[in-house]
Length: 123
Length: 133
Image (cartoon, rainbow over all chains, first blue to last red; front, side):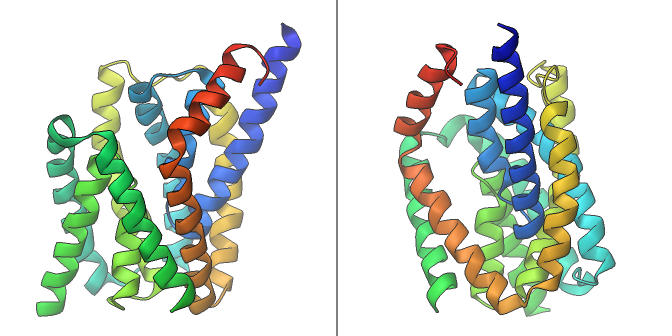
């Protein structure tokens, strides 16, 4: 039983390192990886995993933000317009979540994401 | 001004998807970058920064609803924070065009995972509950 918990802690540390690196390197995406990890390692429900993922990604994003800003990658002129949009959209999205979210939307979203990925990788 | 409006609209689109829990950054960054609205690194920076105010508000609500499970998360938060520094520093050193291509590859991997997530998850969840993970 002791080994069982140990193994989960080690897996937690390894996956945490990967999530942190990816979220810093790509400026996002860590949340999408940490949700399934939390579900598997700690057997959280989908809602708990989503909520806990935010608690993990928040400090990670905060640290990364400081480094990006410090290196001059935040353009105030363009950045502010996007930022206001994201926050406003986030509120709308949170309300829509209860009405729209289902599996087929996630699949459609994944296909759009793949097309975007191909465009960025090859063109 | 037109440019600002376009940036704002793209932000709203990314925000809506993020608020719905579908990985806002993975749509916001490509939208900003593919249409050359901002550079790849600027897109990544703005995604990170705009996540913060949203996350704080959402987190307060989730904590009140007791959805955040804090017992084990420091095993993840501490290494994640350390490696975030490393990831961010390496990212700032790499050329924007190469970073954009690597990001594209990452998006493809993520989307493949999303498409088959049900099968992959249920398999791992079974082993986890059996004590094999």
